[in-house]
Structures are given as structure tokens and as C-alpha cells.
Length: 113
Image (cartoon, rainbow, N blue to C red; front, side):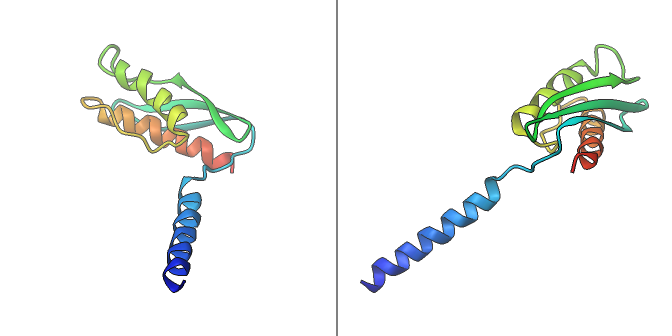
């Protein structure tokens, strides 16, 4: 009986821990702008929050190298929406651009708290 109680208690703790780790932050609905440095200059983004979740990330302005920076400009916003977090993997070869987008989105989401 004691063994069953311990297993139940451990299971409950694991479940509560998992629930706390997987909850996504809730942001206020709206569109928020953020700016951060990329490789060349500032990257300006507009982040739309709908239903408390990231619905869209748009690159509004940037001076990054055309062609070279395209993978980050295309893939990072999509990854942010999919993961519901600005903390995503940078794109190899365009790390500064990737980091700039993530930091700009972070700045925008800080306004939505």
C-alpha cells in the first residue's frame, strides 16, 4: 500500500511539473512593433497577437543583404509562430539577422504583457 502511495505522489508531482513547463504565455491581443539590430542595421517587426497567441510576425523594415538574409527573414518568423516563442534556432549563415528578428519580436511581445 505504501509503495502505491509513493508512486501516485511521484506521478502527481511529474504531472504538475509538466503542466507548468508546457504552459504558453498569454499576451494581450493587438499588433505590436519591435526593433533590434541585425547585421547591417535595425530590423523592425510587427507582431500580431490573437487569442493570446502569436498569430503573425511581419518584417516591416530591414537593411539586411538581399538574397543572403532571405532564409532568416522567411524561416524565423514562421518558427516563432509555430513554437509560440521568440526563442527559436538561428539559421546558420545568417545568425545576426536571425538574432535581430528574435530580439525585435521579444521587444514587441514585452509590450503585449
